[in-house]
Image (cartoon, rainbow, N blue to C red; front, side, top):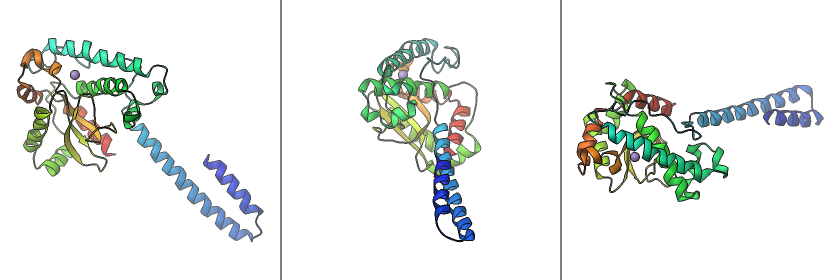
Length: 256
Ligand code: MN3
């Protein structure tokens, strides 16, 4: 497209009556302007390519065995949560977008305008996506926040302990079902918040907006078999099974 503009502009310039030096200067100025326009086009493309690119065509495998997070999250809960709840969200999402223009739209783009979509797309798309983030930010691998993420946590919350308290509080006090998040705001600041139901910070309907970095599912199905009504105990246990390696990766990707 840009090359077409260069050709058209240059054709016009060469038709004008002026001396050749001025013609060369004007052509040069156009070339600089147009190449900077094409550069900004590339930046936009890069931003798009930074998106999660979560495959919406295939139900993703759980990245570990059902019992991998014992005793903090029990195998039976993991099995039911992944194989029934998550799978149902995935199947219902696939059915909700089938035959519509959303079928080939990146899921992050669907979320950016989810207010225009059906409740089935919002609830099941969120349910599908949020669990992918959740499974991937869990592991029993003894990982730690990176130096960069630690520094940002200290800067924003004062200390890791303070961050932990604020995040845990967001998870414990989310009324009913939902999710707590550590996310990066569009201004590249860390923030903690929570969303109801299957909403997430990528959605235009969400009160908290940004790039998800770390999340905890606080629906009762995530903890009831082991912890029953004691959500705070489940939230405390969660801190033993955070896969900081993936959170660090998400943070450095989002900071680019
Ligand atoms: Mn769940």
